[in-house]
Image (cartoon, rainbow, N blue to C red; front, side, top):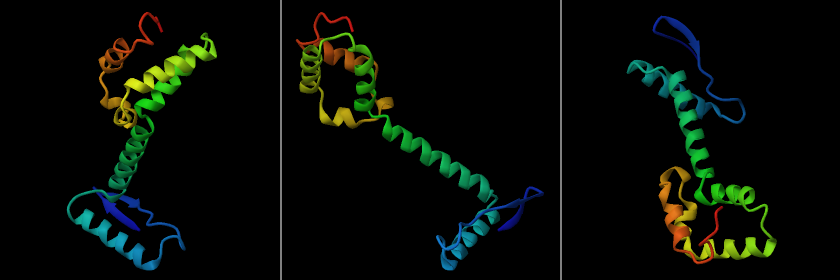
Length: 127
């Protein structure tokens, strides 16, 4: 769809045929025209929505458990396998499943430290 916004000619893709049918393409066109009428650039809005979705997807992928497992592999490489299993079992026993699935951005930096301090398996471990 070609349109003009703030004196500049722009083109907005409504989707590829046959993935997007005629009815849906017309609905997208109507939405874009409504945006233009209210002073919103449909192309910029489409990009903003895509970026926001990518950020949310990335935050979902960065759960505390995913970050912990990556850290775990790096920090415990020098430990014997039996020690790694014992310490990991200790960590799992004190961490809640809801905390493991939370976004790593939502957890304060002192929360894991407090949890480790209360776990007898981790006491005295400098890692």
